[in-house]
Length: 321
Image 1 (spheres, helix red, strand yellow):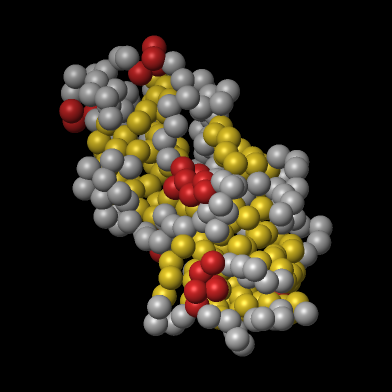
Image 2: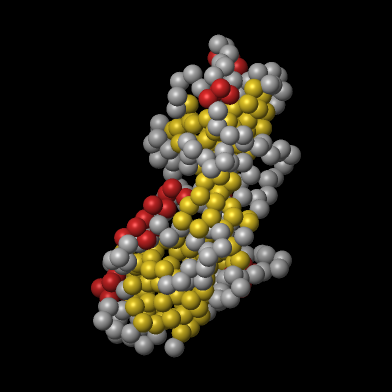
């Protein structure tokens, strides 16, 4: 399944060629022609698992063509972090320079990957949620020129975030919620991110019984977790490929030493409330779906789905007996 990106304004898509050291060797010894880069995160969205800040040494890959010179996947990093980062070239001598007075459309993505597949894309498996920072992909285009040398990227998320807040219900303790083995299935977990277009594509292969919480067999599958002792909740954050579903997604909870219970998730109503003209049961790129799940001794209840894009939209109710 492919997810297409919409680029606002008259921004041309810049196609990236395969990485070549020869492309980036020539440098004009004139700092007045040097392009400078800054970046912020669009939509005021949380960018890592839990925050919206650039971290020190975060790297982005920048490409563009100015005059007869093509810059491909040049690595820039931020040393100061923060919400809006200023980026510097990783390897001195590989700075990007304007070759003439014409405006240049630059493409950037995060996180930077040195060896792109076929020079254009990154592959990943979203089962490995413990390392989700490596596939929380961001993408942007922006224009710069000699007259306005600073290129200000505003990055958007190309993946989908699903946040599951697990609550304790009747006759269930917080310790039991913490220890519950949570399972999700019915989605495609592998795919690729095309850094030239910002599109994602999933590979065929539907997930069956993927344990994303308290997985003792493969701890890399365990999603980031936050325990709120005051609210008596446990929250898991998942980063997934955008995709459409043919049927509802089963979610299971296994209370240690007790019965396993099941509910089903459908995102159609939530997408409708988000303003989709033809809402479908799917994960939409750049959206965060907040679900509240309550564990009881005899059942699970999914108490609605709220979308943040980044306005709040109430979702429906799902129950399992």
